[in-house]
Image 1 (cartoon, helix red, strand yellow):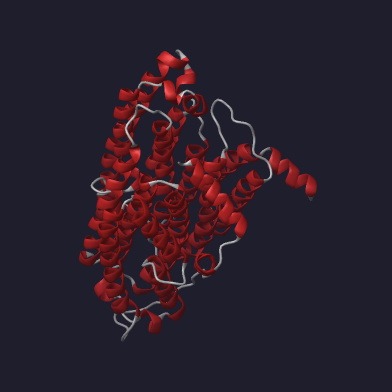
Image 2: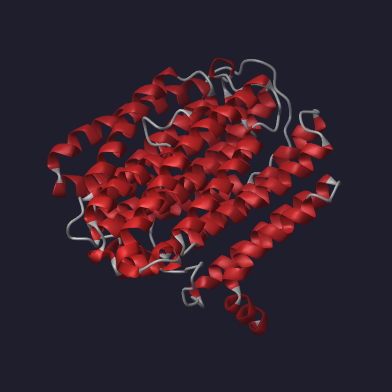
Length: 486
C-alpha cells in the first residue's frame, strides 16, 4: 500500500491531468448509464487522491507546469467538489434519462465533457506558462458552453450563445493582457518562452516596465473578471445557471469562478512585486464591492430559483475579490476561507435545488412552496444551505464574512459601511425567498426523486465544522498562503 501511495505522490501532477483526460475518451465510447456514471465518479475520486498527494510530494516547477503553495489550495478544492458533484450527478442524470430529457448520446457527451472540464480547470491551475493558462481557461469555457446548451431548448441554446459571446469577449481581453505582459518581459528576459513562464516573470517582476504591466492588469482584470462573474461583466452567469444541467451550475459556482480568480491573483502578485506599478488592490476591491451591492439588490427581483443562487454567486465572488483587494494577512486569509466555504456551500445548495426542481417539475419560485413538508430531507437541506450562504452562525461563511468585515474596519473603515449594507441586503433577500419556498403548505405537483443525499450532507457538515472549529494545520496553511498574497 505504501508503495502505491509513493508512486501516486511521485506522479501526482501527471495523474491530476491524465486521469480526467483519459477518462473523457473512454466515456465517449460507453453507452451504458450505470457504468459511465460510476466511471465518472471513480475517475474524479482518483484525481482527488492525486491532488491530496501534493501535500506529500510537491514536484519542482517546470517550463509548463507548477505546483506551489497558492495553487494547492485551489487544486484540492477543485478536485474535492469535482468528485462530490460527480456523485450527485449520477442520481440527477438518471432522472433526466428516465423522463427523456436526455438521450443516451447526450449522456455520453455530458460525461465526457464533464471530465474535459475537470481536466481544463486543473490544467489552468497547474500552468506555469501564462499562455497555457489562458488556453486552459478558454477550453474550460468552451466545454461549459457546450454543456449549458445540452438540453437543446430555445432557452438553453440562447444561454449557451450568450455565454459563448460574452466569454469570448472576456477571453480576448485576457489574451491582450497576456500579450502585454510578454511585451513587458521581453526586454528583461529576452525573446522566447521565458517571457511567458510565471516563475521567471515573478523573479524579474521588479525590472518589468510598469506602464505595460498597469495596462496589462486592466485588460486581465476585465477579461478574467468576466469569468469570475464580477459586475458589470456578469450577464452570462444567471442564464448559464438557469438553463444548463444543475451539476454544471454547481461546478460553475463552486469551481470555474475560482479558477478565473486564481488567474487574477497571479497577475496581482506580479504587479505587487513591481515598485513602479499601480496597486492592483483598489481595482479588485472596487469591482468586488460593486458586484456585492448590485447582486444584493438583484436578489429581490429573481423569479427562478437557480437564477437566484446565480446572483448569490456574483455576490460572494464580489466579497472574495473585495477581500483580496483590501489585502493584508487577515483579509487574504478571510478571502481564502470565504472562497472555500462558498464553493462547498453553493455546490450543496445546487445539489438540493437540482433534485427539488426535478421533484416539482419547475424552477419558478412561485411554484415552490412547503418543501420541508413535501420533501423533508431536500427541504431542510436547502434551508441549511441558504442559512449558511446568507452568513448565519454557526456555519463557516459567517466566520469568513466576519473576518472580511473586521479586516476592512482595520484597513479601510469607510469601505466597511457599503460592505455591511451589501451583506445585509443580500441576507434579507435570501431569508425572504427561503421563507416562502421552504415553509407553509406545499403547492403544485410532486414526484418522488431518487436523490443522492451524501454529497449534500458532506458539504454542509464540512461548512458547519469549519464554523465551529478550524483545525490548526488548516489555519496555518491558509495563513501561510495569505502572507504570500501580500
